[in-house]
Image 1 (tube, rainbow over the protein chains, first blue to last red):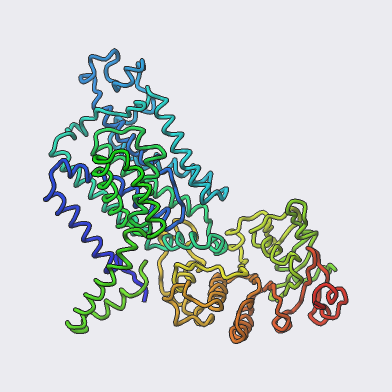
Image 2: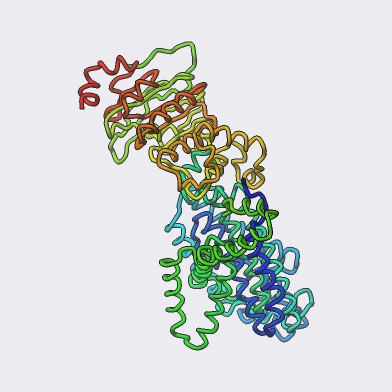
Length: 381
Length: 251
């Protein structure tokens, strides 16, 4: 009657397909330069998964996910930068042992908030806790006052703009507009070699699947159903005895943590972090990846990030001026024609054919499978 | 108009309740009392403030002044979800259910357990929940529709589902806003039957225009007009009150 399994059949197929694609096909077929690009694209998939929960399920549109992507990325970058700024590496500076951009800005001592980032454990915790805490504050301030919908989206956008200005303005502490660059080693391991990029790709894909599982877990609990319920009828949820604000805060914080993990991965893959991944434009692009993939589908978000970024790279090389218009047109087209994105097209036009194929084979091979097919017919999404 | 203190404590005591929207007093110095196991029907012309009274009790609208005591808890100072947890259930005029969830899931969400964020993450759909959902779904005539998405139900079925969602909360005070509005004749009969069964062992506050239905279920009727009580008493008393005939029943 009710599907209690972690994945239903079509989700399992989706999961395995993605696993084979990311773990086997891509690493075997493309060179390390392209694989590194894929790794970079996939960092946005983390943001997308968060947006599926927060926006697709919870109906909370955040146009400021770049903030959390950036916070995660900067936490990682600060750790890597401190490691790259050992006194031996920076002995030509007037103050050796601090990051180069601080030296250029006449800062002579490491600021207090940089100090804990000498510790790798602290850095890993900070990547999760800093964005979660920040999202908690924003969420509590907004949702407890019942600010929602468009107003919330605008405020998140303003926060993205503010954080960018802050980072750019506080050059001595943040590296300014250039960001934190020239990152070299992680725990003494050179992250710039091809071998490191290959390993980091797999580390990232493992993390991505961890996040997919976490999101799927949340989706299948009662909390996941309350998110959907809230999107439909916020008042009914409230008058069923739930504090709607707390659930929205949870969804927003979860999305922030996913985005931050993506951001930290981005820093590792690309080797630097800058405010150009924090502001309004990247935040909106992240929403577009999710919309194109399908905001109700965790896997859709992954494919959306891959495809749109791939298109972005290839198109912006050939038509640098036209690309942004293309992206805008794509977003409008998706919203108007395919509100459920690629995953919606898959579900409505391709999945039925596959189901028919499988069920026709089943009916030939006897009734041993039939129980399964009944269970799979139950609403799963 | 006020009823003197009786030995039995009131379940709900509304006193001096006033709410004004930009100077317009939608509810003006309203006082009434509901006893345990009483079925109270509120009638009155459009704009009399009936729905606003329910909004005030369930916390959807904040009162400008006055008090609402429910089992000696002051509801005007509580949040909506706390009021629900205290034992007040509210059905809205238009069916408000979760279209994208199945009938089972709709009822399950209303089951009074795991209402915190952590509680809902660890909520288990165990035998108690299943049995209760099935029991309620049978009462609301939707036992064979448990796996249907709520969006696919008819208007009447949606109303029943929302009533079911309240029942599973097992509230001590059930507030229904026009429960039979927009229903077909046969659905109306079934609903009246359903309501007569579910009002056992709890107090009910109903807003309804259907006079036949009101006569069937009401213990006591309160007539509202321009945010104030025009008349209160048995259906017989209210029906023969000249003031009521003039502003409401005469039309």
